[in-house]
Length: 96
Image 1: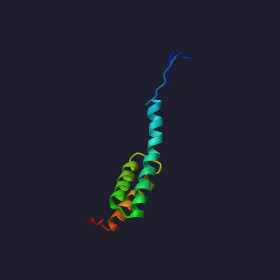
Image 2 (image 1 turned 90 degrees about the horizontal axis):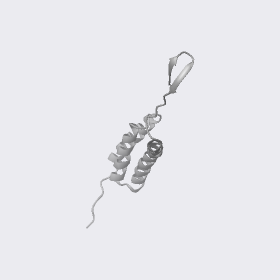
Image 3 (image 1 turned 60 degrees about the horizontal axis):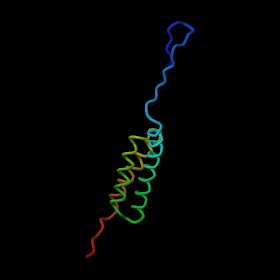
Image 4 (image 1 turned 45 degrees about the vertical axis):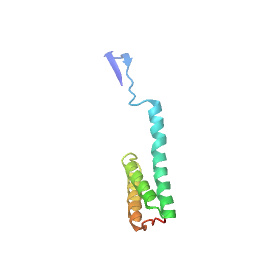
């Protein structure tokens, strides 16, 4: 965006940056990391039949759906799939 006082003579160039470079780098690292963490939690929970891990993965995946716009349908389907599978896992029995 540039501002002109007269035709053909630029006075000042205005640049705008919505966020700091550190914040944008942090967000670029956290978004895929959050999706990866939630997928790993869900898969480990399914492998060892731990309902809490599956639910943690499902809720993290559904929370990431609001942030990652390009793959939002995939994260939504994966999160709902984890919720569905968490219902199928039997409750853990406490041994004394």
